Length: 472
Image (tube, rainbow, N blue to C red):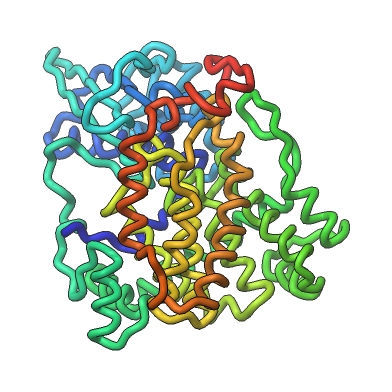
């Protein structure tokens, strides 16, 4: 049974894509680490990176080539200043060389040494990339990695990480396991998850880590609501969150996120205003994501706006964020783990139901927990949210995480809130569909879905708006 931490589901990094940016970035770092562990890093003379399947077809729009270069430089996606990324990439492009792991400089021309092989998809997973390095003695090192969604990276037939194999006091493979542990131990979902987290971290580290995630989410929403202009990539999408925030609050400038949130709280809680704020919060995050900004993978980058929007909804209009962010994140993280184990978090495997659908289910569960729902109501909320995302395709225009991805986050947030209130007004004993049933249904739908609707930009909305993918 795979052991997945909440901190595996929520990763701090850089946009625009967890599978097409964060994953390849981490894969490049893993390749460097493998070379170093075998004493070969200093002997490297050249590196060629080949992208396959979905990584090749939409990699330009998702910045996969940029991510690979940053990974080979061994920049840390959690701490790098996003504003420094263009200069780092330009330095590699202009010099036609790269300083591997900030130590070994080799010739490297991104235009020829990063190959987008759109005609080939490897059977193990659509998001595949292969590193081929030549040593000074002309020997070769070759490694193939798969970015399987949510920033997770694996190698085919390779053993799992030590962290993923650690036994947990209350192992959870599905929602049935989670419900059983809660009932047998008379614990809430976040209490069960917290006890499992103690295997990896002490209490202080868990509290600090969750606070850092929430602080990063809040900061992302705030930046997005205070940054205008046009998104990069060639579609000329105008950022909207800043204008919405200004209309709702007026032109009063804010330099502090907490003061800004207090102004939102003071502005009233009429349905229309609250609805506009929820949309604004979600737009803000995914506009930041599309602009290579700092975001939290939740559980993916393309769906990163749903959970922060719903958490901001609670913090601004329902209660104290101090009382909410830990149980929300612990609950939502476990729901994300259940979907990863029983289905997928990869749009290249399951379409957008695997991203927006899962994030909406996670958010619905977290909100229901914070609103005082029972364990059964929390699971019911997650089921309702996903049930009404089943079959959602991934068809990004130009391979960019912009159209329809940004707006879909607003829809996912609103569906999560609706699902939470439906669950709170329901008796789960009367439910006809369980969370485990909907997870299985999602996976079966993913298997049946035509490949062109799985993050290839070869079907759906992506074909209705003429865009030159090579230019994006």
